[in-house]
Image (cartoon, rainbow over all chains, first blue to last red):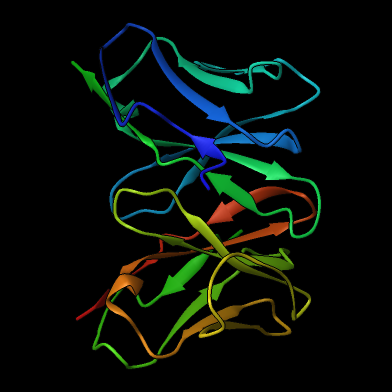
Length: 113
Length: 111
């Protein structure tokens, strides 16, 4: 039962343009959402997060949007840089029990110089 | 402050064997979780320890077990290894409800 879904396994974007990575979820009890970036042979690195009480959070070139009614969130990277090329994971948390994270399957972003 | 460190980085085991993976939490973090990431998948929650007690478990069989020590470091043990156990095993630590920090993982190959 995949509660967090990233339906695009890959995305290619020209350097300087906007990258938009999408994520859908099914569990309405998720209260906190995170984006992680992962390079080969490294663990996931935290990028940005958003609480369910907000609809937007911005940090430099990265902005996360949350649409609770659609159970959809997106990560915008602008402008995209070659160093942004990595696998991006969307994750969500239920604030009960262990507060563990549920991850999507990831989207591989390639930024073309 | 040091991050989350895991050892070993790579490991090859034979089906039926047992394996122990280790994790040192980030300084000040009292909660540690373990995740399994199979090829082409996102990380899946195995279990979590808080102050040396397991306080959450995902959909993994009992042959996956763990420990947390007083210094908050942790071990993941897997008995009777199966080919499908081949994956990247990630440890994550945190203090409170936020700030999940992941280690670089241990790549386990079962042959």
